[in-house]
Amino acid sequence: MERLFPCDSFAKPPSVNRVTLEGARPRRFSRGDWLLKGTDERYHSRVDRHRLAELRSIAMHDAIAARLRAEPALVEKARERVQGWLKTGEVHPAYARAWAELLSRPLDLVCAALVDPGVESTALRQCTPFAGILDAPARWRIWRSVGEQASR
Image (cartoon, rainbow, N blue to C red; front, top):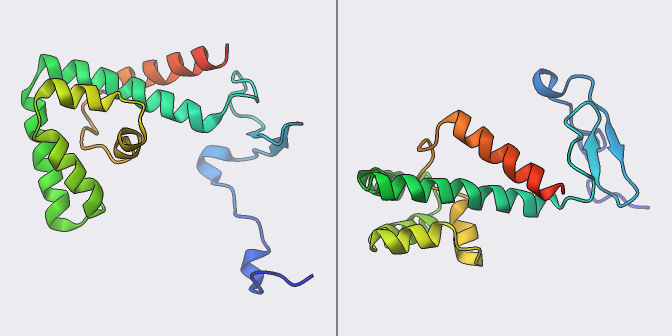
């Protein structure tokens, strides 16, 4: 059988990050899901991890929307961040332009778009200009809460 990548470096598995996963071994479940042994096993193997990430993102942005309603000045900071993206090219221009357009709309529409489960909003949440608005304890509460709800 001919290999797709003849280079020897592709034959070796990637190394494990020694800081976070030292000694972790992947364990395969019957469905084909992988879970790192030694990590948090509270979540049942049948939880769709991609869907879980989407639910967490929506929950985080719901909390962000609540903050924006309480402190509308935060929208201006997001606009400034997006303008920086447009100047530096740090974020793909299509996403930066989409965020610029969205942030030019009234606050109610911005907040509604932040939690919209549609394809476009899901894509925009992947590179949000609202990073840093929620503190770490709030993010971890949301992370745990959504994970626990999904595992039920």
